[in-house]
Image (cartoon, rainbow, N blue to C red; front, side, top):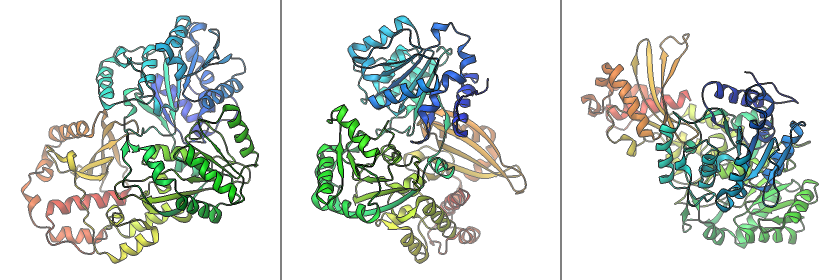
Length: 610
């Protein structure tokens, strides 16, 4: 099969559709797409009935139906309208509250809340007429929740262990996922393969750190936010960091993010709101702005402050009547409102491309939520050249706050000062190449700094210890591993005609894989890479697989890389000192051992290679 499409699809959208065909042909039918907000995920999956026409044609006509599951009314209506426009010959209907889809509909767009009502009575009624052949879960980072897993079990994609007595949308525990992971180990051998489940999201990571591997088999397609901006499908981001005197240290953490009631009490104060207004007036006055607040009161307080200062502002929340919300969104999009403040209603399923500024009044520890909020301002719009992102940066010694630099892989606690994030990333990479011995994470523990301040510190400080503790990962290990970051561990050694590196790497669905790469000594020769293991539940499982490979097929290097090798505890050698200096370390501590120096060298080389 190959992807045949109608209308004009962007290259990455064609690639995403082709990935579904490739997945089905490869024996996978629970697939995941990761695409940034604003890159047309709804329009892309609306083309599934077209590109899967030959695959669907092998089934009886009544068994070719498509079901789209979402959790917000805006997502339902947007999906239904887009699918109907893309497929004029299909009957598309909505199943939600008092809206009932006909059993004769070709495509049904349903609310998860409606499907789960009265112990999934509406879903069971639907299944009496047909079993959907294609199921799409929009904003599928919610799919690990009990409600979704129960629905997917009824639909035949998951084993019966997924069916929960209490099917709550966001009530998921790690114990639930462990049960599901064990059940899936045997389920994939007997699960029906004549149907397709596709999850679509901009952010596959959940705030509670529960991975999506308990639902999906693999990420079929991933399109990076930075790449989408570089390709011209999203606008560049210009960021400003505004430091406040508000402390968040007393705010507790709940399910991976701040306790929202305590957070609102901390940040919704006159001084902080005035600071936000001053920053907006300086950097984004006249630009259509979405402000993200902690709660309803916070949204209305900010709206009142903007109005009192002579600006056109409004607020929307879950308490805003549906018709009133639609009117306000239309007024905003028409340019009648300068700043629209909202409490968690515009993070998903809202298309407001006129937005040219995102004002982050709500601190968050969740990278997923932060990217969702920021993504609201990145869509293309006539005359729009950039999205201005203003982060209010509070005092948080006990918490790690998300901010715009993390969108480009930069430290979230780095202060930005009006340059585009791509410019910041280029300058940061240049700094890292010039100061290979400089540990940015260690430096930022002393406080937030701009890139210029980090550069000055790198030139002034001779050395930061370059070996990161392995923590629990290192317990019981056979060989000496190096921690590159929280998602990557590796061990390198001479092999064949060059150097082989075995890496334990996290993937986007919360699983781990083992990859071995041989870099030949001759730079003209290509690298050789192979995957040794995939779908490992934890980094420890992956490390065990990696060490089994080393013990069975690389026994000769154990004398070199075993954790108990005698040379490890000897004093750092002159050759290691010279090599560290070549990598940018100007002063090597005298108490450094050969083992520590080896780890430091490996990490610096990995950082330079990256």
